[in-house]
Structures are given as C-alpha cells and as structure tokens.
Length: 513
Image (cartoon, rainbow, N blue to C red):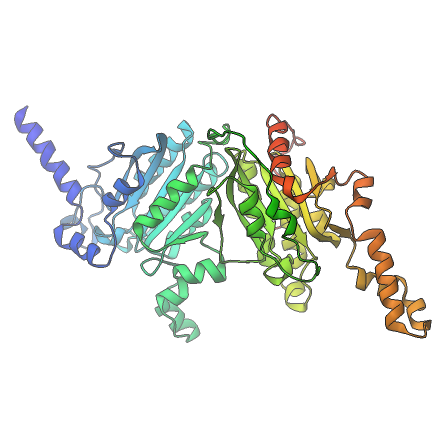
C-alpha cells in the first residue's frame, strides 16, 4: 500500500507540474499566471476540488504516443466563490498549447454536466491555441460537444468566460455562447482566422492585437463585455460579477443587508440642463440612485449611447439599461439595440429586476443604419423587453420620442411602474419638427415665418413636451421630483418582489435575429 500511495503522489506531482518547469517559467515571463495559479486567485482559499487530474489523451498519431501529460491540457473541478459553489475549467497553455481534443473536451463536458445538474455557475478560463491538429476530426467533435452543452446550459446557469491568452478558430464559439466575456489586455485575443490567413485571403496586414485583441473586441465588435489589465484583475472582475447573479434560473440573487436612511438625493434636482439640447451624463444619475459603490458597468466602451450594467438598490441586485445623452444624444442605433437586448434577456433569464432610465430622442437616421437593418435590430430590444417577466421599472428623465419611447420599456410593452421627472418630454417628435409639419400652412402664410414657427413650437411644447398628457392616460404612473427617485424605486421594487407573470404556452419565440 505504501508503494501505491507513493506512486499516486508521484502522479499528482506530475499533473501539478503540467507542461514542465521551463514552460511555466515562460508563461510567467509573458506576465501570465499558470492554469492552476488562476484558479487560486479566482476561488476561495482551499476550496478547489479537482476532477480528472490523471486523464491523458488516447491518440498515438504523429508522435503523440511519446508526448503525454496528465490532465491533457486542462484543469477541471469545482470550488467556491464567496462561499457559493461554482464549476470551473482552466486551460493550460504549457501543455501542447492548451490545444483541445477528445479527452480535453470530455473533461470540460463533464464539468458542464455537473454544473447543470447541480444548478451552479460555470466559469471557463480560456487559453488555447485551438484544435489539436494531430487528432483530426476528433478535435472538431470535441468543440461541437462543448458548443452543444453551452446552448443547453444557456439560461439554466450563469456562464462566464475569461480569455487569458489565445482563443482562435473554433475555440472562440464556446465563449461567444456564454453570458459574459472578460478579456485580458495585451495578452489575450480572439479571432476566427488569424493574421496570416487574413493576409493570404484579403491581403490585409494586421497584428493579432489589432485583429482580435481586448481593445478591438471591447470597442469595435462588442464581442467582449469587460477588459482587465492583467490576469488577477480579470479574475477579480468575474468574482464581482457573480455577486449580482443567482446560482441558477430557479433562484433569485442574494440580497445584501441594508439599513434605510435618508434616501433623498438633492443633486438630482439640478442635473437636467435648462437647454433641452444640452447633454448630461446619465451615469451621474445612476450613481445617485443606486447603493454606494455598487455600480458595475458592462460593455463600457461599446455602443456608448446606451449604458448597461449591474448595481444594488437597498441591497437588492438590479440590472440597469439607460440612454446616454452625452454620446450621440442617447439615440438608439443598431449596436446599442443589440447591446441592450442581450443584457435585458440575461437579466430576465436569471430573475434580476430591470431599471430603465430613459432619455431618447429616437432612432439614429441614415442610409447606413437602414441598409444594415436598424428595423430588425431595433426590434430585438423591443422583443427583449416585451418578453421579460422580471420586475421592470422605467424613469423618464427627459426625452421620450417616437417609436423609441415604446421600445424603452414603456407601459405598453409590459413595464410594471413608469415614473417621469417634470422635465420629461413624451411625444411623437420634438416640438420644432412637429410644429413645422402640423402648422406648415400657417407658417408659410405668416408675414414673419420665424416668429410664427417659434409661436407654434411653443404651443406644441405646452401641449405635448411634458409628462402630464401621458400621466392623464395612465402611461406614466407618477410624475416625481428627481430628488425622491431613489426612494420611489426602492419602494417600487420592494412592491414587485413577488411578481409572477406567465407567458403564453409555446416552444420558444422567434426573436428577429
């Protein structure tokens, strides 16, 4: 028995060493942690339990019979984050470039199965050169197995991906199927085809960083939701994100202790500029309304005309969607519609109440938007809100014009409570344009056309550029002083805490993708 125990210890040491001391040293020189070091940072101390430590690949082609490593390039298991169960896999680039093949994929799939069966979040730390070429179609089959399970787990348990190194070819689609992606700046990248292939096919010269680095995907493509300056920061962001989420779709997010105090925020009374065309930062409104230091923005640098993220309100986890007047006047366009729709659907899937802060002058006009599908893309956000059954509250701070008023969680598409500030303007369009259309003949016949135009503009504004017409019809539940917004929201979400809404029986809807 002593001999067998010694053999077991030796095997474990081999597995812990991974690709060998020299390769681990190389990993450190690049400023990256090893697969196991990442798990130590991510999980609570001494909580990790490894599964499949002694697994090796089964292929004997192309010299693989002489190159076997225990674990086959991925560390899998379960542990805890802030005392809550999570399942994790961490790819090991020091073992054959972290390449994925049969045994590697089977280990990941086992963890995914356990995650769904036990209702706990799944976290993937990706650092892989892609499919293991030596194993051929088996590698492709392994990826497809993982993709299928990602889809099965979608909406069942939260799935988070961290891109800690290369993620190329088929490897990018598993993270893309998960709920959120975090990328490490300067050391990680994602692309379907690398710079060499791009150069061969399109003759474009581009670096890995410019093609698929953290900056490119956080600002241009929107593929990644958050970026971090290094491995440790990325792993801490994942820990933070999980704190806003429940374990699975059957639970609600944990509520933190909160002691009520003076909930008035006097600063909100002066935040809306006197000039209706002057911008202001909606993030100042968010900061004033939510619990102190609880705001975590998602997709910060992508489609900045809309702001989404997690926060807490009196200790309760909420998701926030807000138009941003400081960028493109807060209009809705293709990118912002997609960004917000995806976030709304995540919150709805995991029972996270939604707060919408609305200041939207409409949809962005132009041939570029129309030809690229602003109609179907704008409809995605409309669909997402209409489908959502979680508590939904809207606050109209200033403009709510045209179809964008309908889309931004209006009463008509199922919002539970709608508040408006006295500065709210709820109308088909702005007073200036409306006056030009409605009073075109009178303006044309006037001796002084500019004076008449301004007169009619003021007339229209008096009738419609305010929240009271909407309030008279019940489209707005209450017109409130901005300073009491936080207090009103706390009470509204508390009232909606036990909301139950059943959708018509169906297999699934057909969102306009």
